[in-house]
Length: 136
Image 1 (cartoon, rainbow, N blue to C red):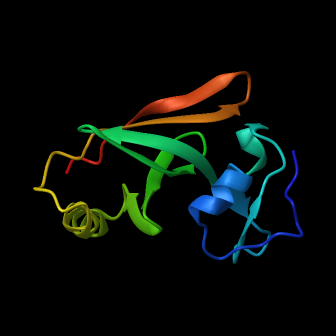
Image 2 (cartoon, rainbow, N blue to C red):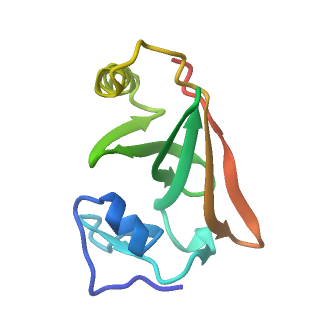
């Protein structure tokens, strides 16, 4: 697997993940670049950004996971708006939840745990799926 060096982005969109389901940092860690395959050996790269589907409380969202061996965060897309959650940034998570509920025009609900699943396969046929809960 290789980085596609001719493509560099600072901000990822849902359309980027439709074209390339896996991204990683460039050598300077200033931009991200897509990877050429969807079956990857994660030890070759630090952080990965992997297209995934998220489910919680009857809602489903497209977005991407952040991490590698484990996932420390994720982004969901709703109508070209991004909502980012990171296990290391509790205050960001809380503000993103308030903004998400407002954007969905719904009453607050228990957002976590969030289920995720991806068509990307890690290493020896390890499917990417599980739950993320940041204790909010």
